Image (tube, rainbow, N blue to C red; front, side):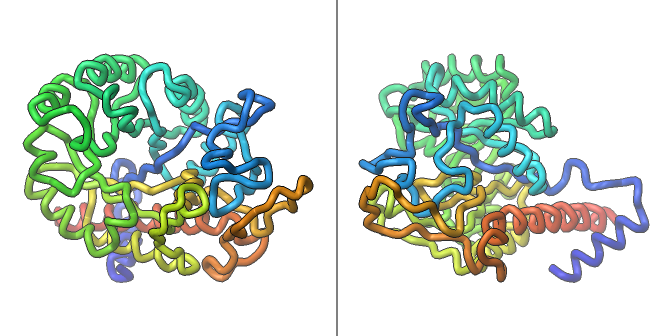
Length: 342
């Protein structure tokens, strides 16, 4: 990696007008589903699984912003600025069907993302299995196109009621690029998807990316492996699986492996999926005390120790590290493209 980085820097000196546009693109999964009583009438998602906000939230970490509303333009504006400053080029907003709360907030996400020159895609979630049918999805794709969406990531496309023949038709007529969240590259290719991504950082670790991208490239598909800082959903869902952050070492290992696999795009899980503990959004080092004495059975984790940072400096540690990796990825992708053509 050091050798390629030096080659990238040399290339930029020799060909200063070429630039890095269009290579080494990164996308991040974003969740617009949070709410507060003041703006939305109740705590949405923060109170999941019986938790009692504002000091007891359904997450293993406590957000530096406190429990916020995803319908607050000031919050969304600040989040989009953080994402853009980290060198990310595309926000992938979680989407749960036409008319869902996430759909109603999508125009706000698009508006604030465009302010800082971010593209917006969506991750089409399973909704309920009896709702995400071929017929409803066909109409949903028309709706998304009308909103200006040009790329969609389909979460677990083969788990529901849409069969492979229907996916062939949907991909053919979608009018936007669809990527499948799957490791089954041959099935994704046979059903007409443009590419594959992994999202899941528990089952898809650093050792899986090279094999995935090799298969995707052999099939003529885009490879967009997903990196993440860690996983811990126990406090929110009771899931006992854990991917420890190891003070940032796990995130670095994911990025290194993803870049080495030479993907067309790296996706990041996630900006703010607080329930699963995959977020890189700033988290408080010392969560506020509970004035109502609501019992908090498990203490919150923090980013303390990440990349040698503690306290306030640690709150943004993963955003800072993401900026390093997005820059390295663009430079390395540019170097590979340039020197492969010489």
